Image 1 (cartoon, helix red, strand yellow):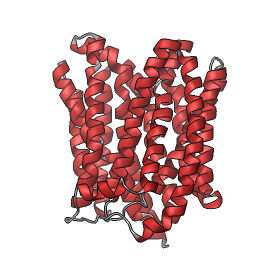
Image 2 (cartoon, helix red, strand yellow):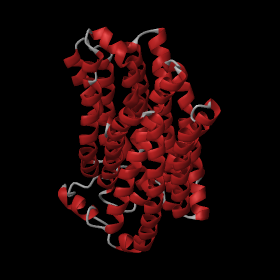
Image 3 (cartoon, one colour):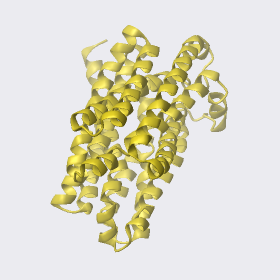
Image 4 (cartoon, helix red, strand yellow):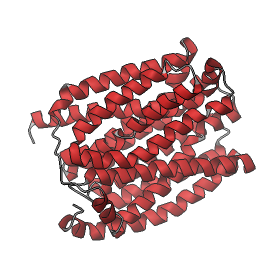
Length: 402
């Protein structure tokens, strides 16, 4: 492969990574800002929770819409248009003065943010050969989740120095940079269109193949266990250590840093030891992470180590599952990755809801102990799925979902 080709693909990966970073950071920033936003627009904090609901509902629903649109009209074209709208929604969020208006802006932002993950992953599947794909996916996901890990620290710092409006303004500025790069350098990204793509047929095919259905199930359960665990780390730190948002965010950067590392090494490890081994190790590390919080979360070094293990384990496992999913459909890859994103984020919502009830009833310690056990069970199931995916790979190659 030529040096020029490598540079081109690396530049594409950097642009997609920046887009993912901004979207994931924006995704998680409202929760710690909610009290300040409530004061700013003159409502009770509990009513301001509508802003999170509006964002998450539109984010979840539109996961399934952008995949088929990308397959039909071109992945580069759709993700570029969506980033323009995402930038507008984020900028408008900085100007919102009423709960209704701000909820509409957050719903708009969430709807178009939903495009970035599935379409970026589908583009990576199109552009990178299989031997390079897991490393590329891992790098993209690692950079994206670094945005999630840093969101509380970034938001807390800017809110402290300026206001919650300044947080949205800064994310809008970062989004302008990512969108400009998509419109300029990104215009050279190869993007196939499939005008004959049917909306329902690929869904039916993807949901009737044993390997794809089982993979989506594992992704759903991974979202429940890992995203559910991550969702309450900030609240756990605040409850046990009484840190402010800035220090909480800095503590949680261990997740993002180790996720980036996991993304970089997942491909070489899979090439050497096989996907099944990398997936298993990733889930075991996530299980250990929750167990560390359960057993020794009261010691800050142990807690930071647990957060780091969760980021590393998540990325090793998730990049493997995503790489498997890119093989399910060649001409409907956008739709295949939309289903993955929908399963993962939907699982995260379920895991967060269950976790909230469990924490209210039994506390954080029991919650992390229970989720550690759930991850142990998921590890066994995932090993079975990885074995089935490997045995059916040749069938999927010869009869892909069209």
